[in-house]
Length: 222
Image (cartoon, rainbow, N blue to C red; front, side, top):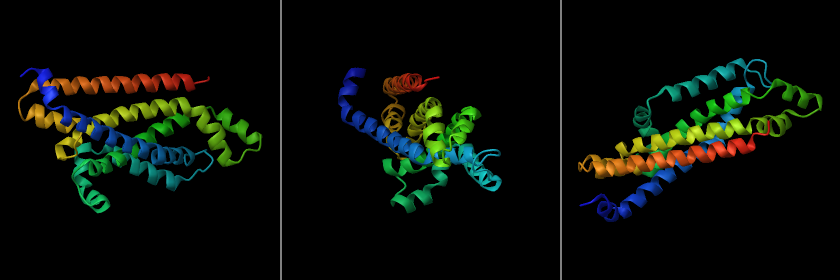
């Protein structure tokens, strides 16, 4: 059977796998934006010399982020099985796999967001203060707009990592493209299917990188 015939034969599974991958990556992106960005902002603001300087808070949040980022992802998935089961009622499936992905997404993007915010010139903050802006106004009207290009690039990098991580959860029944490659490529010794999946992932990553870079360049007004 040729590769084309196999793809036609497995097309339902392929589209289901792609949908599961997009679902996991979408949940991870939402977690990164809704929770990772605030955590990254907190990391930045609680640093020494910043508006909300708090050494204890900075130490605690930094430690939590570092611990999560230092975990090998597959071990983190296994470690979080009891928490995942408690949260969504099961440890198998796309939604269950999204739980450790979301936690990693928060920590991963928080660090990148902090780095982007650190690149904002202090003069911008001082100018905002001199104009009588409140702390909340400084964050929303000066800090985020100045860092938006870096924040988008960081989110692009994170998205590519989430795509990579989503292929790993196939090993533990998370579904997605990785699970398809393992079941129909590796376990059935159909290497052409595995090669197809690899090419598919490369194309997806390139598309994400291109779109993210173009958006970041458009947002960069410096």
